[in-house]
Length: 431
Image (cartoon, rainbow, N blue to C red; front, top):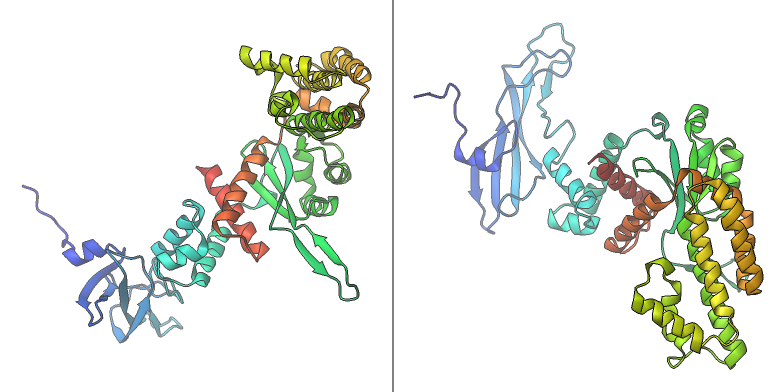
C-alpha cells in the first residue's frame, strides 16, 4: 500500500480549486450569499532579493473577484505583510502576491481568462459577459486589452507572402448636419481589413476604404516586410490598387474572381430590367418568365440540372423576343470560362477574344461596360489566373466580423471593436 508523502488538501480547498491558495473559512451570510476566506499555502519570497520570508508583520483582508463556484461567492484574501529576512535588502517588508492575484490586482487570473474566453471564443457580448460573471463592463474590457497585449503578435515581425484586402461597414449609415449649413451629409463609416492569405489571420484594420488608410498602414511597415509580400488580392477597387502601386510597386496584384462574376451577374440583372422597360414598357412581373426565373439567370450554366436547363431555355424562347437577354447571359458565362482558364495563353488568345465577340454581338451597354472593366483590370486578371489568389479568407473574416457586430449590437469605440476582431482572428489562427 502506497502512503501519501504530502498533506492532502481539505475538501473546501479542493472544491474551490484556486491554485496557490487554501480555504480557511467558508460561511453563509444572512442574505444567503457565501463568503470564502482564503490564504496562500506557501510563504512568499521577497520581490527584490528573492529570499523566502518566515516572519509575518501584519494582516489585512482584501476582497478579490473570482469565478462563480456553484453560484456567486464573495472571496476574501487573508493577505499578510512579511518581513524580509535579508539584511542587505533595501525592502524591509512586503505584501504577498501570487500568479493568480499579482500586485495591485483585484481579480484572479482565472476570472480574467474566462471572461476573455467568453468574449473571444464563445462570441458573447462584453456587457453580457460582465453580467454573467457579476463584474463591471470596464473590468472585462481591461482583461481584453491585457489579453491583446499578451496574445497578439507584432505585425512587423511577421513575414506574410500573400495579402488580401477588403472593406466592411463599421456601423450603420449616419447623417450629420454641418455647423454652417442646413443640408444633411451622408456618412458611411467603412473599415478596411488586411488579412494574411496563407494563415487567414487579420493583420490590420484601418478606417475608411480609400487609398490613404491602406497606404498609411503599408507605409508604417518596414521595408523588408513590404519587399517580402509577393501577391495582394483585392476586389476591383481603384483606391486599393492606387495604394498598392504607391507602397508595394513590385508586388503582383490579383483581382478577386467572385467580384468579377458578381459584376457579370449585375450586368445580366440590369439588362433584364432594361429590356423589360424597353419591350413591355413596364417592370417585370410574376407572369413574365424572365422575372419568375431571374435567379436562374444568375446561376452558373455548367452547374444547371436538366430541369433547370430546360426552364432556362423556356425563358429565352418565350420571354426574350429580341434575343438580347440570352446574348448578355452568354457574355456572363464566357467571363466565367475565362476566369477558369489555367494558362495565360488560353485566357488572352481564345477566351478573351471569344468574350469580345460575344460582347459585340450583344450590343448592350451593360456588356460594353463589363468588357471595359475587364480590359482595365486585365493585368490583375492575369495575376489571378497564374496565382489563384482570391479574397476568400478576407470575406470569411468579414463574416465573423458581422457576427461580432450583431452580438454586441454595434460598437461605439472603434479601438474596442478592432481589438475583439484581432483577438478572435489570432486565437482561431493559432487553433
